[in-house]
Image 1: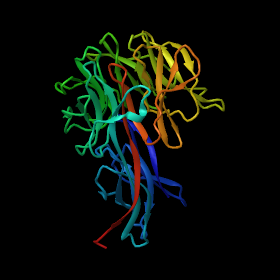
Image 2: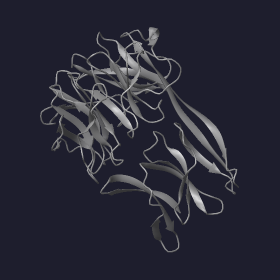
Image 3: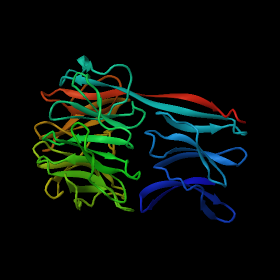
Image 4: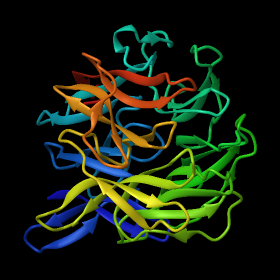
Length: 388
């Protein structure tokens, strides 16, 4: 039996492939290669190895790999910017069938309450993640258009697209400092472990801010530009909220509860994030938590409606007046932005899109909304091994 193992070592969390001998109950790690994630595994018909859906951290998407058995030699079968699932292989191993999944999107600008007249500002079909607006009114985003995962910048009309990171691992989640001097982000460029980094607003002078032995990500700069808040998980511990100086130094843990995707209010008073209350109990539920910025103390929790998009990659945004939070909610495959006052009350719908999935959003100066919207496409593909 072949399966994946999640493990930790001095370099952090990683996944490995193991085989269990049913008769002897002996478990053996097959290959020394470490992956970020491992999905499906399928034995070849002659038991000479298996195919694996896995991500090794070098490609933004999971790819198909071939691992020989018992040698553990690894060979990459696909190498592109699409995702794969549903592996199937003929008995002789000559033909592989899989579902190829691709996310395509464009960036739109929408006046509040006028979704019907949203303006598309990017041409063609691309991939735009982690959209955030800078103090200067520029749009930062992550994209794999370069063949890797990098951070880009463009004007509010979609012009002057500029790549800010290149040739240095995978880079996501840009977040500008309120004074416009820096951009913080998370990257696996140093040893394959996600760490928090800082760079100048033009992409220059990258500086590593965290040096944990396991993953640190989703950074946000404090309103006074002095600290960076981020999510980190110690080995065998839940991910929690941490803080480090904008110049680096000794980090400080602020929460003990399972915490995802922080966002700092424009007035600097609060941090909002996803939390799970009653974790590992029958009464567990997901909420929006409002925390005190100085010490991470819980101020209150907000109940969220059914179908709210909750997750490590699902942003919560503050309204410019710091009085409400925004989040995404999906209905019948269509995404819209909703808002909820931090003082309580019922959530209300902000946008009224009738089609497409929304992948990211943020507010522009003047109250306009910038969104990344598109769809996930899937096709069945057949890959032949001509050597057989």
